[in-house]
Image (cartoon, rainbow over all chains, first blue to last red; front, side, top):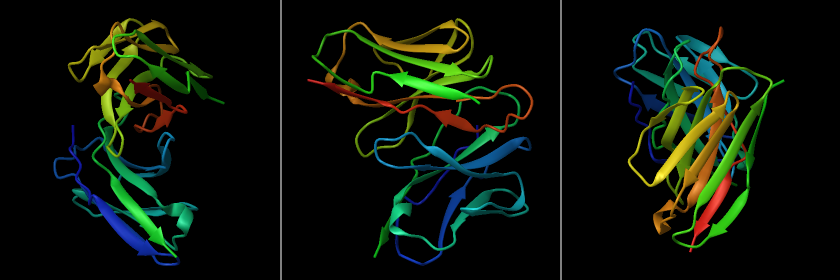
Length: 111
Length: 115
């Protein structure tokens, strides 16, 4: 299983773009990269997922370089409500089994 | 659509008492099921996962156990709780048939306080 490494915490201000990078040096060919957001006392919820290059949805973008050894979650213009813990997770496509989260990045957005 | 339910939402138990947390999934079949624990201010720790009825994999040695008596039911148990069992317990499921990209769907969580 690919182990992931993220910064423990980040600070930002409202309206700024925030980029959170996750390292997964031993990612396998069939692994997908998924990012989750977790608020206190709630379960994590899906933000975005990708395999390579760039993926964009209504809330975020995910950048994955050609070697796929890292990925960057980009939140375009954060607000106070984006204060949360963000996790990246690497998992094998269509094989089920264990899914282990890293320590996550605690993002604090200030006014 | 698929839904996941987890209960009880909150539980306060004395040390040495038993525990039973239940999780059920609706709207899918043969999901992978997971139990995670989150201690205060910490990350998600995988406790158990199951790829099918009666199939349980344990990730961390502890006094907890898990069972999957039915395809969409996952139960976390303990015979005697320890103070260190306090935490936020999360059940999750994952699609395993066509289209599985590893996305997990989480329940609402159960907060356990052991006194």
